[in-house]
Length: 395
Length: 102
Image (cartoon, rainbow over all chains, first blue to last red; front, side, top):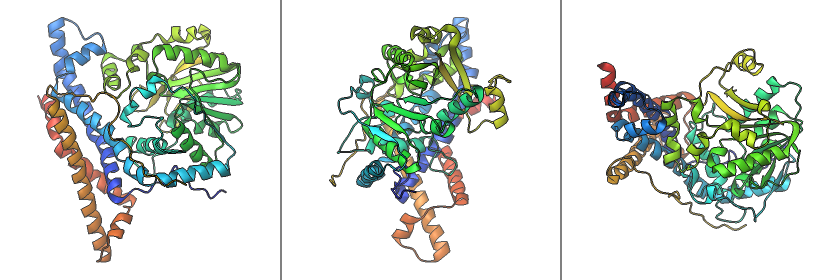
């Protein structure tokens, strides 16, 4: 056992800071969801009937729904609440990170030096940080994924790590900072393909690694790698993994030019990554995935469901982030023809996978297993984290 | 080790969104939401003071800072916050309620 301090839980929050975080969590969990329900009522009972009366048909896409809803007080109120909650999420953890930044940096240095789990951290100060990250602060997190304020900085990694916990409901016992998406994909693959024994796994845009860890837990014999352009994310992620005793290999690389050899990985994955990329970048990264994948390996990325997979109203709700959460590529990504795009990267049509994987942590185990084995249709609807849309294919 | 103090920025890069015809309303909305948060913080602090006094009869600032509610108390506080936020923002919910009633 190592005695290095764990960057993942060493942050001390003052009484009032905890209280601000609890407020944001409660605000996001309750009122936002209640008002989202109200918005649907108003759409169904007032806005859509009015639209049908005027046009003789239902709205044909999310754009028309948005135009009809745009000045409804409930939409304005819901949007203003959601927007403020997003910003207040990061604000609620920044003061504690500022105050204890030196401790966090020291703990990260200690973890790197002792390296008790045997993982690795490869930083490249010359990495090209793409415009997707430098132009706007994605998710309104001031400083985005990459900004460094001091030497060996981990501040943005800490703001992201602790802020995400506030975002998903507070620092309760039941909140696992490790990722639900990766746990769902990894467990699904293990059940669906029991003979598939991956030796090397790659996670793209891994941030601090919450959705990279679970691959090592599910496939303990595999070597698990994560790449990201943000050094503070990777330093934090590496220190966290070492303190948790999980050997992870993090590299500061751009997914458009990842530089790994051909036929190198058995699984290439990502979570909530592609919708932040421009469409040309998406196509480039997918081609790189195909190149790096071993024959017999699988690429499976978790993403927002494509526009064609969800109904018009839900598309309108999802697309909110594209307009207001500093995610300008979101809608163009969702509008892609996924079959064509995956084929364009080199995958054969009959080896393409578009799978809706139920959330591992919250789905009854029997249902999850039956779904993964294909004995039962994966029937859950997308939304509220109950099911994850994944796309990719076997090589 | 360098002991530099860092100030993390509060403003995120990119255009600030507005949802109302008059952007002043958006600013007021932000101010009111922040005020609601601060009042919730004050509630929490008073509750902490009351709980410590109930238990110990005396109190220090350090007691307050160190105080962490147990699970049962956290559940009660969460419920209190939910109801409180529901009261403050109730106006946004009334139209849907009326439509459901009609």
